[in-house]
Length: 114
Image 1 (cartoon, one colour):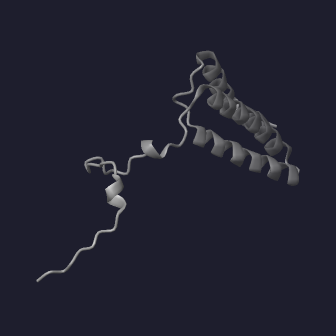
Image 2 (cartoon, one colour; image 1 turned 30 degrees about the vertical axis):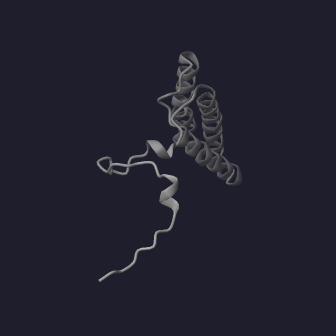
């Protein structure tokens, strides 16, 4: 019974995040990827808890899934940090970039002259 209680308390942070996002109407600091990952792993644990007939795992995972769905929904409503390839830095900020022009796509014939 203690594990069940601790599992339900553990999922409480999801409901706090959901309430904060809904009250502020801003999810700019919330990672959509992290909560989607948490949602799918919790769903897997919930299924495993049902198959193993483990009530504590099933109930705590159920509360996690509901909380994660609420947070993911609030992120979709108020815009969170989605994975954006342009915001990912690979440590090459010192390399200048330029836009390609139409002529850059043409094949050039380089003659080897001696």
